[in-house]
Image (cartoon, rainbow, N blue to C red):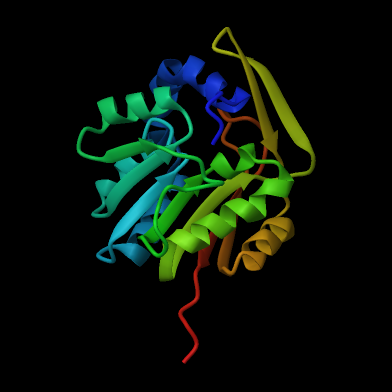
Length: 215
């Protein structure tokens, strides 16, 4: 990682407190997301350590830890990590980059990555999934969510502060291709329309697995 902060990292640093205030309890208004996270929790409970990758203020990690998973969180933003630690003192959070995870091979039993993959350029998505595959044990589970569609979105102001945040919109078949090229098996894809309080993009959730070694 470069010592100089990326525009994305600096942007989230500037809005971390406001973001945490708005989103930490967002799952209370999202029954579909809760149901999908519950299914994920059921599939990995009792296996070992699970990472919330691109964790923000740690609300996904909080939800899953409260359902019996052994959670940790990683995020690019120092300020998001600060918020996550304050709001979830019983969960370990650290700074990290999903393109170069500071984790040994086969360290994790599962990864959940809610919308963070949407911040990557298309050319970097396969690299991120390659890193996730590397740090997962055989049979490890992955749940990744993203904004469906074509093209990109850009935001240059948020909470009345200057930011530079890009969102890559992806099609289901495109995401499946990235996952399969990184060595994952796609098990299930779910979609939902946006809630009235969300940005109007289709939300997509992919359940995938790192295969067990062939006998």
